[in-house]
Image (cartoon, rainbow, N blue to C red; front, side, top):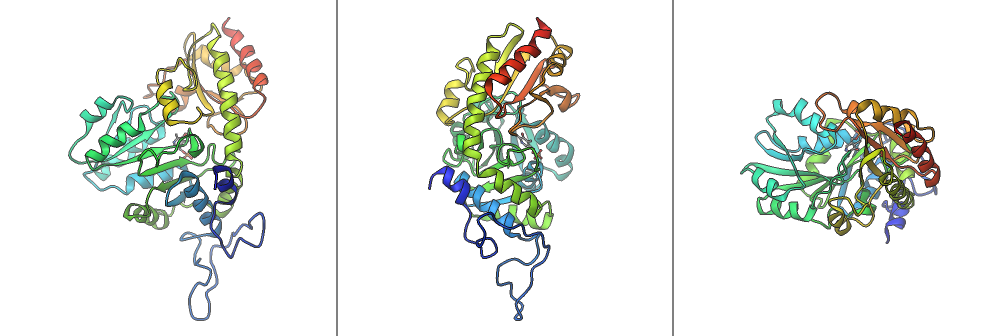
Length: 375
Ligand SMILES: *Cc1c(COP(=O)(O)O)cnc(C)c1O
């Protein structure tokens, strides 16, 4: 079945969900046993398994083209599960351009667990090769990266990892499985913050780990999910499953709007750089074209000046919301460095924009007016 169909019908048959067109929400934490002590419908306690969570996991595994998926209470908890699946003394390579929360997690938590890591330029294959060590067990990718929209050569990194017997995990939050198929490019695990485009309506926090094979690695992830306990609620799973049904159509419109906004920003004298892989001026546009079908709904741009000028542009927006996060139907914009904290390498004049599903001309008009404060 095609992507759009799997987004709507991608879950497996389930006796607790199938009598309704829109599935019921199973809020119960516990399920009744048969007199012989068995659980006839397969569910015993909702941390171990819940019908709404199973439906979301099966749908997301199907959309990514993976064998199995485990949902978490946030994208951060999903990332955490992947690093927790490694052992003390293992080494991971992580892009210096990765989502700041991923870098912060490694820095704040994992040194005491004995996990070794290096932040490198993952877009430079020679730098990747040089950074590999005998104990490198995993390479982490995020492409396009948040918030600088850098593109990593996925097949190139996979080839280096394979040769060294290391796994490749990719954070596909920004692109979604509609725009790039990371298992087809050789990745072993895919992580999402389902908070973003997958749910798409700015009202659920969630995450997922999908694996290419239903193997020992997936068993480890499932164990961390169930025995670590950072599971999403049934209601959150129900909402995310409702959101994902329209993912293909939302993403197509996000991409068209982002392309229009990026092209408009590129014409503005107060804008000194636009970071969007769909622009032919993006340094990795050709690579993005090879491994993505479209270029996504996230972009960033730099304005003439510094933090003060960037904040003034945000303050001038009326339609585009002054808020963090991305992937919602409503557009949002933020001066990114102030969200990432004092150690950030994100330039102070950089604005990150999640382009929503309002009309492109209203968004362009709003940004044009906001940019006038720098004229
Ligand atoms: C938001 C985000 C995360 C973290 O997800 P949460 O759901 O906020 O915990 C991870 N990676 C990327 C690329 C993100 O944008």
